[in-house]
Structures are given as C-alpha cells and as structure tokens.
Amino acid sequence: MDIYGILAFPVYHSLSPTMHNAGFKALGINAKYDFFEIQPKDLRAFIKKVRTEKIKGLSVSNPHKQTIIPLLDSISEVAKSIGAVNTVYWKNNKLLGTNADWIGVRQALLEKTSIKNKNATVLGAGGASRAAIYALKQGNANQITILNRTIAHAEILAKEFNCKYGGLKDFSPENTDIVIQATSAGLNQKNDIQIIPKYSLRKKMTIMEMIYKPLKTKIVKDAEEIGASVITGERMLLHQGIFAFQLWTSQKAPFGIMEKALNEKLY
Image: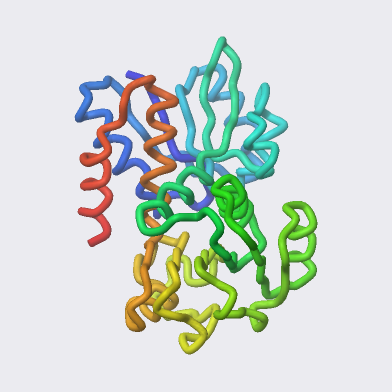
C-alpha cells in the first residue's frame, strides 16, 4: 500500500485525509493518506524516514512550509517565488517540492469571479498571503494591496511582489473588488474575531476566507449578511488537493467525490 499524508504541527484538525482517502477509494488505488504530526525539532528525522520508507507524497502545512525546503532535493520555480512548499512528491528518484496553494486560491476565486483587472486587498502578510498574492498576480489582477496588523511585515511583502501596503485600518472599500482573508485569526476558535469592520464591506465585493475551521468566520458571516459573494476556506483546500492528487497519482482526480467527502465533514 502506498502511503501519503499531511505533515503539520498540530495536524489532527486537517480534513485532507478525508478528501484524499475518498479519492483513492473511488479510483481503486491501493493507498492511504495519513496524519503526520511532527514537531519542528523532528522534521529532519522525519524527512529521512520519508526517504527510507519511500512515503509517496506529502501535503505540507504550518509550521513546515519553509523549513522543509532545504531538506528536499529541489523545489519548483513557483515554490521559490512564493517562498513556501505545500506539496512534496517523487520524480526520477528525487524528493521534490512545489506549491499548490496558489492554485487553490485561483480556482476558488474563479468559481465566483474573474481576477483579471480587479482590485484586490489581501488581509495578512504571512505564508497564506504569499500564495494569495501569487494567484492574483498570475490572474492579472489590477491593483493588489496588502494590509497587516504589523505594517512593517506588509511593507516587506509589498516590496517583494510590487504591491501597495498598509495597516488593517487602511482598508478602502471604494478601491476593492476582491478581499482575501489570509490571517490565522479565528482558526479553530468558536468566538468571532473581527479583522475588518462589517460596515466597510460592500455587496459588490467577492470575499474569500482561507480558514475552513470554523467554516463561518466573522468576515464570512458579515459578508453573507450584506449579500456579498462569499468563498469559504474549504474551496481552496479542495482545489489545491485536486492538483496534488493528480501530481501524485498521474490520474484525473474524482472531483465530485472528494468535494462531497469534504462537505459531509463541514456542513
């Protein structure tokens, strides 16, 4: 049996096993997708295990997306541009890394709106923001603004990607068509955490949340209440997972089955 898995710390909140195992079962692939909860201090030893046991593929989540890079044989140009790896696979007996998060962002957005020539605001300046900005750039967005609680972090990212930047209080609804919530605020929390006030949102906006636990974060609830177009976090998870599945197996992923498996856990 081929072994795949999600590498993170903590890891057991992830729905990736639900999605991928449903895909393997549907296609009759003799494989299992498991949880690998690995602390940062143990990452090097774990990658040695991946090599010796020939674990077939990994999804990589926090806090390992950057620290795994020097432990791989090579990474893709996309992963270099984003500065993070979220998918690990074997090719020609080499352990390689790429980034499919941006594909998850792009495909989730395209289900609801076009990206080309749109003005976008990305909330946050961490790893998820980098994938979101890359997706917007690849989709030929017009103007991208990065807003973060610590403005200095937004400035660094803005200079790298040639974007505008500011603090969260600088959110400008007049100049925003797409809002991507890419901070970790509210992750796995029951209490609502407000990133930007509800009164600053507009019905004309497409508002994307990158967190999927909880599915209905404060910004999602606010966006739904004003009638804006809303993208919840599981859409990104699904689309990046589809890309990884096809990369690992060289087979067309059963989209509807993997989508249904996710939804049954979330709704």
